[in-house]
Length: 598
Image 1 (cartoon, rainbow, N blue to C red):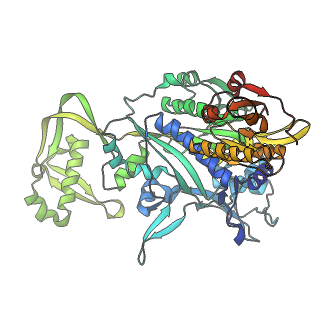
Image 2 (tube, rainbow, N blue to C red):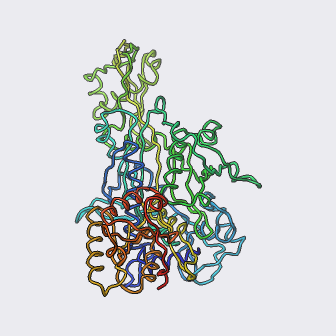
Image 3 (cartoon, rainbow, N blue to C red):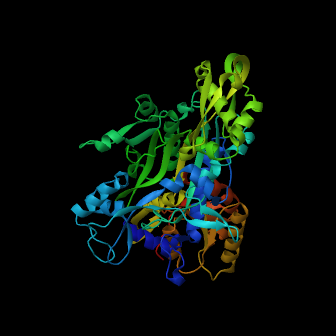
């Protein structure tokens, strides 16, 4: 299915459409319609079930606007950039790496240096997509993707809309560790919006300026904590390692998570564990596993803090798109916030038994340092303490040299060793402060929604009539069922249909009611939005002996069974939870009907 056809279907049936159409539209922003909002919510609930509840993690909800200092610490102010090339004729801005990828077949041009991208633009005679002007010679520049704002009136504090949900977890670590009782490992999840001022949004939900992420930050002790790899070691995966991507005849590696970790293909057991969990989850929600892979980041595209990084990718419209990332981030994030922030971003790791160790200490004579160094006396004392920990031998000389300040403002001071009062003492320690490492599975919710729609799209023929339908799994489908009276000129049927719909809704099921047009046309409408089951109230169900019954039609096969009204809510709930429709076929009377096209 072409991407344009998917976007048109999504618009026609209320899944998603471009925002602000009454005002000309705004690129990079989409509104989820009634079907799309329900589908998206079901995806989020399924993710929450697997990555929060079943993993024993906790979920938070942090603000979407954060002060500038957060992003100075995280590195986003300096390094969160995309490659921009501007047309010298019409002034249109474009992602330079995307232009190169579209024209040359290079898959990851963003990993290339800017100068090389400029050369590729010139060598391939690339032109502006808007007006056709050649772009050779136009500079490729870095463009920071964050949306800036002001926090408060007047001389406001500068802030930014968060470009990822992760920072909202990292900055709250000092309090979150208290809720975890200071014990590792523990995980914090968050589902919410993020914002990136994309140069050239495109591809429906694939590249937006506002989008939803579902992220897990797993905090671990790198020396002791191991993932429960045995739970996923036999999960079969299709991997595309960096070595295969670089080879002329590179191929996919079909293996298991356990074998890939043992062989070192997946460098981190924690990353391997979450690849296995994700594989099972994607299959659960309906991703076509024949159009799915895990691709390892090449060295040039891997973030500087990531020891190992893989993307979950799906094939949509003939292209492979990233729908999730899995990174071992080390201690980069917490160390940076510990450096810039006012709280401690470490955890106290208690020893099994107390340890007696020798520790170098200083007790500077401030009555000497004060008169000699004035306002720098405190900084000199701190520098002496730091030096004692790092290089105790420095205090063997008669004088000790320390540096105070940074950069051009740094000053060197000499202190008499006897003024420093250096000593080595035996101390008993019960533990040490460590900086946890972070493992991050990060999912794009909108991209997952678009993948599910693309992978669920089907065309077939029922009773001689062509139809289009979405084969969405019941757990994810925007509606659990639709209820129809077979005809609308029989008050008994419409009354029972109303009652059935109300009872199903009271049971917590999302139910549509439709009495417009022929029954076949109503089926087609529900098929096209992926409703898995249609319930029809007909005369046979109320005129026969015994309790009232209805027919339940399964979307993909169009097979029907007759189910007692009293059993209906429980049976539909079981189907939504994953029971096969074949189980109903075994338990109930099947219905042969020719009303599909009536």
